[in-house]
Length: 310
Image 1 (cartoon, rainbow, N blue to C red):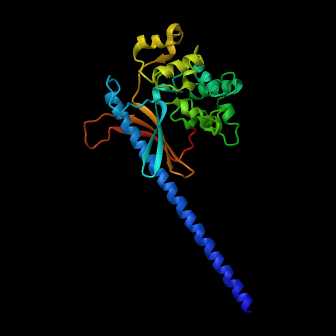
Image 2: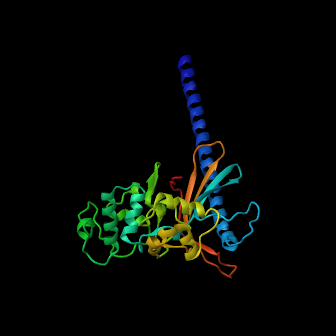
Image 3: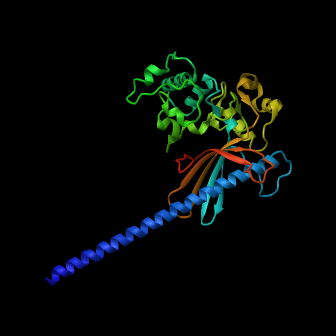
């Protein structure tokens, strides 16, 4: 009888110990996740501050020590916050492909640049064009209502411009892996926009994948563009010609050096000596105001947490 009592007591003690340990680990995990989130949010605020600093000082000839102007071409920047670090990158939306305005050639070249097979790229581009046009006639590789209404969960083609990037998941051929990417490669979402309403690419801000979407672009020329803007921002036709040389005339209809006031920001928070990260993705519009009651910027997109390939 005594042995049974001792056995039961031991089971109770071990169960209580296990529950206590599990609760402590759960609390620690929650706290760590919360701290990483706050660090990422701090990185986001730092990035917005740097955008305003950039607007004031990007054309100065003398740079204050330790106060360089941040690039808006996806260059990563790291900072310390408390017992953690944040990594942020900013991209001027003018350096992306606007899926509402870009030519079919630009869209296809971008898909090929991120290693989408040509047959799939043809299907996606034709289906994107069909999705936003006003008629019910589908292109060779495209899709209209007859395709979408035959799906298990049917819906109709929009026949209007894209309002968000996630809307692409409704388009024939676009999968979650293609749009968001995976651990091995970036997704299409990193290189496209719906905010610029332009059919040209700002070569000052475009990442290499977008530069490679420009007809007649070569990897060497793309690297040359990226290298040149690390020291001086290309402004105007003359400087663009200087960087591109004889290739300028072949690309001029697809490129610009004009920036925008819309920026996408990726912010990732991490704690020192700990695994795991918390990532935020946002798109912000700078809106100068003289009112003290209004912020000089607004978010048009804000998502957390997200998976970001770096």
